[in-house]
Image (cartoon, rainbow over all chains, first blue to last red; front, side, top):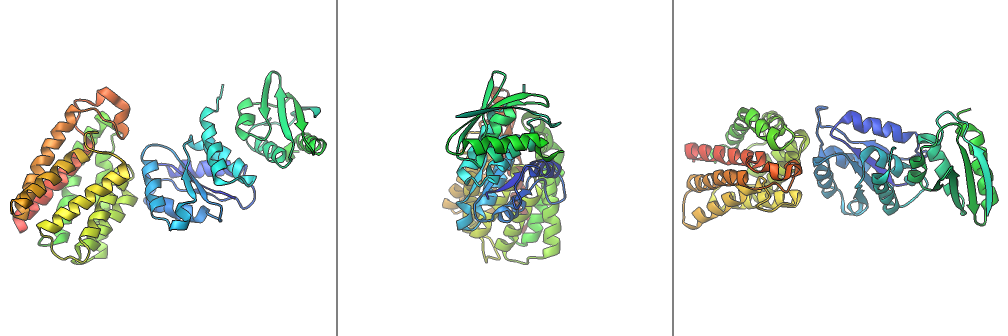
Length: 130
Length: 88
Length: 209
């Protein structure tokens, strides 16, 4: 199953989203939080993200969810630091972080490939609430 | 093509975890499955479409399945809904 | 450079001293944390250098700085300055002194890193608007045979002009770009911190080289 990494400027947000999405995950689904910086403060840390991606990969690639602005840059830096074989199998979702993660987890849980999981996550941009 | 009518009796309705279970179950069959609630329709295999409907407890839904395993498919989905998605 | 560790200490002090000014700039056209983030990053750099004692290899020191900034700055400056220092480290690997040629290569590599990471070019109201003119001025001085302190001084003067220039243009990158036309009239925080780093290096070079 495609692994999911949740990158937020806030460690609590990342953990909370992982907890919520975990409710819908299949057994063995990797959903790894990578929020905040080393001292627990607000921000993103490319090394933390790199480690999370490596942990989330079980052979089918990884989709990285991001919140705002510099999270994308940190995620890109993290991906640059991966070994070549893994680098090609990681994508950054263009999606709202919470709704996108939930949608991605459901898609991943039925064994869909990375390209489908990424597209499903992106579909969350259109989700209306009212 | 086969149709079936069901009522959502679980507390959460077709949100979050139940929605995920519904989509995962529907996706395990080859048949095309459509959900109709009032005037709104959704592909039962699309988590976003199902979550977007926002269906609560008590909603009547009509499921239509079309394909080689359509009967088994609707039976599976019926069992899931009627078991309150495992919520008891 | 006489002592790389002393130079780094000077840089850290300068950034920390300017924490509020940089944050104020970032309040106008950003999310009001550039100074806070940079100060936190350079405090961590100070602590890391003191603990690790990486010795005289300039490349090793710069690499440690880059890695530290990446994990501790938090905002966009982390990956940007972090990559800049890592690339500069590559140009200075194994060197225990820095001459004009090495300094030029370090600056070129740093700028390349920022462009790769940030996907920006000159004229978008970013740190590149201070650093690219600085590099041009530095290499101009180098071609004229000037000393390292003199080249750095030219680079700093060009960076200062670059910072002023950022006031006149619209931001098309980063958080400031959300403000569009309202970003005009405000100087870019990243260009400002780049200028501070260059100015501090220049003073250090004048006193020690």
